[in-house]
Image (cartoon, rainbow, N blue to C red):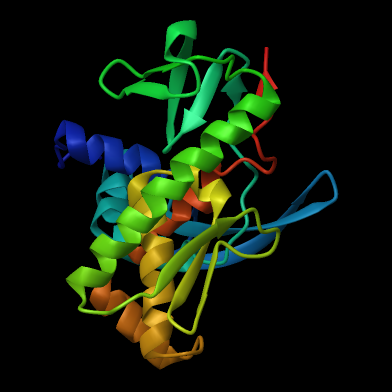
Length: 246
């Protein structure tokens, strides 16, 4: 079969991202079919989304199908477990989902200058040192998270009493009595991923459980929840601060 679909650069980028989420298997099936399956790597159990595709379909056709069904893929991947793919070079800093270079600038003492365009973080102390890096993450989380919560809550007209941050082992966020707690580790992830956790907690103010009604409300107030949340599954380092490699 010849290629009958042409993709924009943005669509190609989306397809490449989706291919990190879904595994494609060609076989004797007559139609496309999605399925969740478990597999084991080095005694660890993972769960992934499989797309079974007819053997007669070429890659171009399969990619078009993946792109068309991207929202289904994001939703299916929720609660799946994938091997971590993030590898951080020893001279880089993971911050808000991007890898930054570090440059020492002693004259600015305990403050930080972040050049988002050129991906450089200037600091008065060596941020490649674990203790200094933790302080950097803590400080950034302490002002980014309350600002994002305020913005998200305002959009759906909810009042929040306070925002607290900490390093929690078992959850990304929680809420109660008008107080939202967010895991400091989220500062490693993109802003949209942070927002997905915030809206999850805001939805709990409206529906205090994980029922079907809760997810209906969550999808209504934040339609891209599953797409933005998947970054945590695919790329969030297991360690905090994240380990680096040579």
